[in-house]
Image (cartoon, rainbow, N blue to C red; front, side):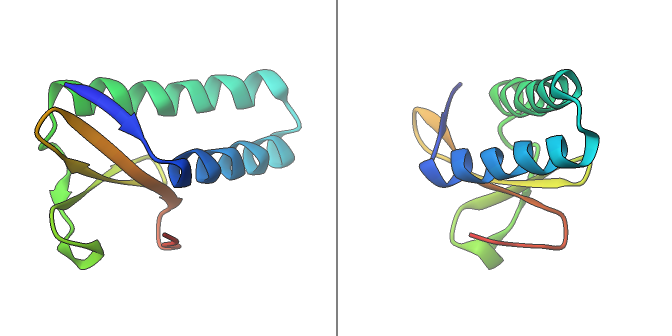
Length: 94
């Protein structure tokens, strides 16, 4: 199934990328980490769209997938999966 990302997701991922770089001071580590995170989202949601648990507390039809310390909120539509946002666990921000 096709995966689409919202502008909010991209902004949050940019913030995560900056945070990881600031903490690690390693461009190569940051790139590997973020690529691994993106690959996880695309691979698992493409193959198993219902892998995440229902998270109606964020809205009707929203599901929640956790990877390491990050929560990914998404919705399954008819022809694609819309990845809405990503945040560090226990720090929700839509």
